[in-house]
Structures are given as C-alpha cells and as structure tokens.
Image 1 (tube, chains in turn orange, blue):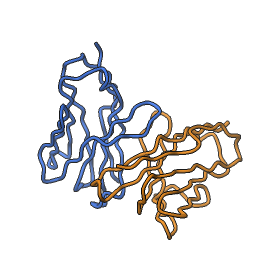
Image 2 (cartoon, chains in turn green, purple):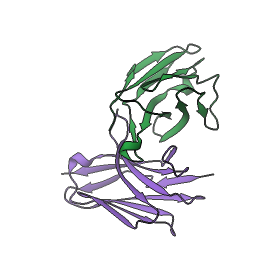
Image 3 (cartoon, chains in turn cyan, blue):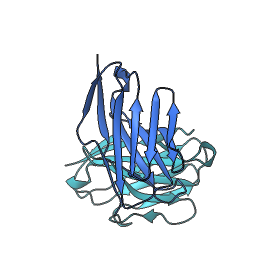
Length: 115
Length: 113
C-alpha cells in the first residue's frame, strides 16, 4: 500500500488568486493522478502526472488552469489558477502501485473554498 | 460517452441486514470494476476489484457480482454495522491497465441501530 499526504488540508481563497496543492507519497510511484470532487458529486479525473514528462489532461481540463509539476517519483503539485467560486471543490491525488494490484490509493484531499 | 450510475438516493438499512448497492454502466465493456468506500472528509479507500471473467468476488462481509451482459455490478454488505455507514463508489477502468478510473455517482449508506 501507499501512504499519501496532501497540503494544505483546506484553504479559503479569494477569486483571481492561485493555490498550489502538494501531494507526497511514502514510496516511489510512476503515475500520480489528480481528481476533483465538487460538492455532492463524485470524483472527476483532472490529469495524470508522469515523472519526466508533461501531465496528460482529461477533456475539459487545461494546463493553463491546472498546471501540474512532477519533479520526482514521490511528489507532485497541482495549481488551481485564477480561481473562481466554481473551483470550490475537494482536490485529491492518488497513486497506483504495480505491486499492490490495480487499486488506487488516495490522499486525504484538499478542501478549497473560493470566495 | 461512458456513464456510470449508482443508487441515486441514500440507502438506510437496519443493523444486521444486508445492504445491496447497484452500479450500472453504459457504452463500455470494462476489463475490471472496482468498489471504494469514502468517509466524510477523507479520500476513497479501495475495497474490492472484480474482473470481467469473474461472476463474484468475496472479502469478509463484502460480496461483489459482475454481470457484463446486464452491464451491472452489485455490492453487498452482509450483517451490516453502523460502522459501515459511508458513501460507496464504483469505478471503471477504461484502459484495462488500471491507470484511469471513471467513478460512479456514489451511494450513501446509513446503517441504523
């Protein structure tokens, strides 16, 4: 299994600003994933973060709005840029580990409120 | 596009009974289907994975069935306990490699004394 931590756990931000969310894993993993969970909704995949290459974004998500860094095999950041109230969500990172099968392990999430 | 639907309404059951949650999908034939549990303020936690060639999978009080003809998975919790109260999510692997998960809408289960 993997232990994942995220920072910050929650934040309240003003519209037009940006917030960078950090995701740290206790072991090396190839792929890390970023999800968004809007209030009362299920999880939606934003992008896949690969070490050594650019992130792969899902339909409806763009790099200018959600830039991602993946400097090494245990760490990734997601930035929510030029925020609006519609960006208020829980943002979660997850990893998959070949040694653990096909399941994904999730971080505790970052609860973002944009005023 | 892929659509995954779960019981839209919350499910309330009495302690000791069996809870049955439904996951229906369209427009895809997944190689795997997974079930996760999510508690308030926490990330989802993996429970079970079932493959397309498996009809049923069990783990302690949990049982998952997978009917690829009906495009449906059922998730059962037997002898339910108040501690089982949570939101349960099904997720499809659309790539076959476990790399991308599409999640269902989730079903909130409440087990009452």
